[in-house]
Length: 133
Image (tube, rainbow, N blue to C red; front, side, top):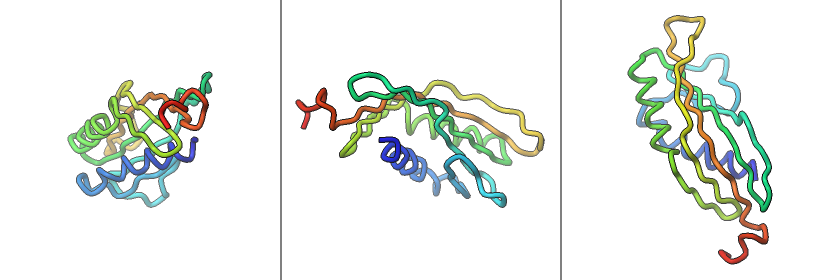
C-alpha cells in the first residue's frame, strides 16, 4: 500500500512542477546539485489502524530563493492535497492539510517552507470494502 501511496503523492506533486518551474521533486533527499525551487517530501509517520486503514503524515519541504515563490508553491501544495480523495485500484488515500510553516535555513538566501499533510489510507482489498467492489 505504501508504494501505491508514494505513486499518488509523486503524481500529484509533479502536476504543479511546470507551473512553478520546479527544478526537482524528490522523495527523502534532493540531489546535491538541486536547483531552486525544489521540493523534497517524506513520510514522517505511518500508523496502522484496524480494518485495513493506516493514518499517515507527510512533510513536503519547499526550498526556493524567493519568498513569494516559496509560499505560492506551498499554497499550491495545500490546494492540491487538502481534503482530496484519490481512489486508486488498490488503495483509497484521503489527504488533509495539517499545517504550513517556515523553517530557518543556515543559508539566509534560501527560503524553506514545510507543508505538513495528514491523511488516511484504506486498503480496498480488505473485507470491510467488499461492498464497494
